Image (cartoon, rainbow, N blue to C red; front, side, top):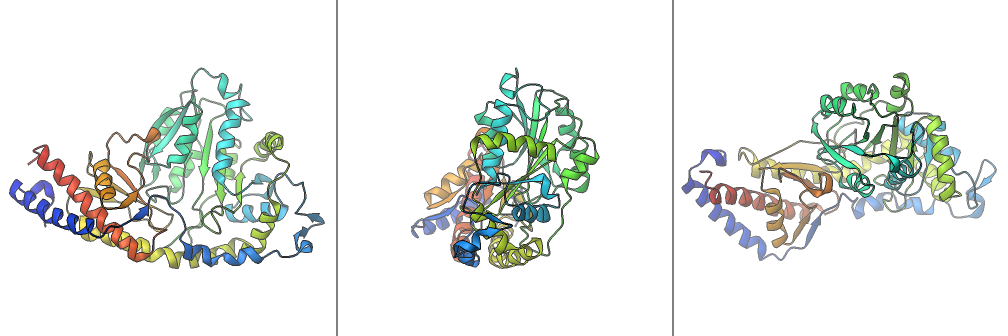
Length: 428
């Protein structure tokens, strides 16, 4: 069938009537489904429940002569630092192992930049006349919320299949008020793009006017393939060092979607100078993080190779769900001219670019049918998508049968929203 833009009014009205009949049938089902956040499913959590029994006796909490039940080792157990160095491809001396959330580390880095400045800061950020931060869009709402909280002017940067528009980034960093950029370099949230080698090289070779410009390299999905084999990714820390700016990047990761999202371990990785400075400030807030949990994770996950084997088991759970979502999008929306999307092979999201001006209406209609998605606009700073287009889908949590029902609702509502726009605005 031809694209909506190629049909006459009579054909569009007929299509709308058919969809309204489907809408009424779906409403009678009284659905109550939630696809709003990218959470692991219960079956994924069951995969790793043996983690809970790794340590059962006090003597098992001893390692290298240290009792993990006690204070000490602010930067993390050495074995935990070595684990993350193996996963990320950096040195253990370049890591600091935190608690259950890398988001906390990201927030604290921005907060400490604000109150104290970073290693190369001429003054704390709170004393700057203007503060700006680059925000690739569509992007991760929680990143944007952090910089919004500290009063940054957030400047959108368009995402491309190769990563952020680097021509724009290289131009924008000439402004000394621009203090950093948010990045999800592998399986970006929400589109699932992987930064190209050229993009990574251009990041490492940035020459920002601000001496304390920081690349917030959130490598949340570094081992999270659900199709195909593991794809290695280059170490941005060494690349920045080779380019003469070793303090420009902070990398973040966690086990949130490897083990338990609420009870994992996280890491911040950077130059040794940055880690020393970070540890000095972190020592005011903490004596140490949960080393029992760090040891438990290291003994359970062992190393990168063993972690990748576990991720294949996660992939077997996730793969049918993502395939279902992509199949539904193809079968319902292909050739309609009202939406497009990327086919990710890793990460936790699918991002649909709907016809401009229809994202909010699509999700309003979905809510009427009992299906909740991430709010329209969440992919942009302050929740404002100027095109009203981007919709983030999170397939990981619901069972496949619920996911199919939710996607049926989504596709019907997206088409209805597009038809309303065509007919109400007399586009035909």
